[in-house]
Length: 161
Length: 265
Image (cartoon, rainbow over all chains, first blue to last red; front, side):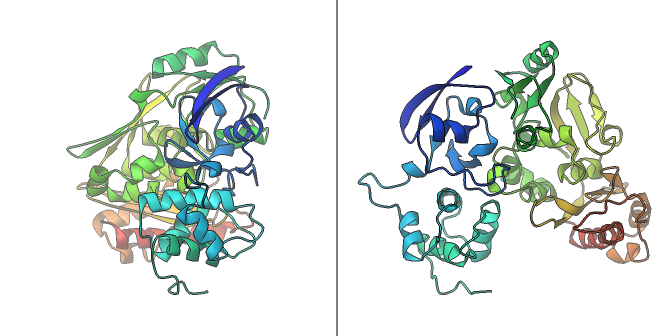
């Protein structure tokens, strides 16, 4: 067993993990933060995306031990300090950017990372950035609209294909 | 995933030492292939030696005509490096199209080359430029490094430390992505230098990355897409699967090479 300590959503946490324990398992089972979802478990679907030191990564494809000392942010850390939804979360609600909601934590984490990198992405840039986040309900249009809106851009410009 | 013992190494020497004392150890670079492979129980190393904390294995330096990239440099770092982009944009573009953004924040150039997936992108750039792979033991020329699907010249316990690319006068990578996996169904890297043109193909052959020497000869005397208009690649030995049969991939090699030549900058 390996002892790990990291910061998750601003709080220092530690725990004892096996060498094979995935970061997603440590977050969900160890910390009981079940907002991070595990969809495919083969690093394709992106439901498990969290930020590690500010960068989006697939937490099902990283060991908990690899995150020793890291600053981790999960969907539970995305709301504003007063508990209201972040701009991106609110935009997902306003634009109906989810149906079943399973992919939404990963979508919000990826979208937040995108806007940190590129505050006014084009529609094509949004779609490219979401290549590693799979949604089986929405057909992506409303997710793209939500991200356009969250970045302060005109939403009507997003055409249905 | 089967049980495994985790170790963190902070230098290549420490990693090599841990590796030699492990029963059946494996280096853990970015883990974007190794961890899914272990989860599928297709690999079960007794020990994982994590080299992500080895600072000496990270970083990019661009000097006169050469780009040196540390083995543990991520795809996102290569894609986003301004100085490298101005000197060798084709390499940044290649790195920026591997996998997806989350994968690019973990996956590394050294990990990709050690794995030598027959559809990976980096092998095409390394073979296409005639780069040199440095390890804790020696320097290996690209032409001597790739030994077929998932096979390389690396010895057991050898740790890749950096890759040195000669920066070509013009280069381009064309990737026909398999849309589900985002690996290359076929990818072609073309690099033009003062004295030669090299063409390296990934994704197509059952032998892994290879040089298309007939195209190199034609392009060396006439670096235009038309120069290879009459050339074709045999479908013999090409990968055939549900995404595309051997003749489809062989045709893509010619089409993508022509596009890469036309787009080379």
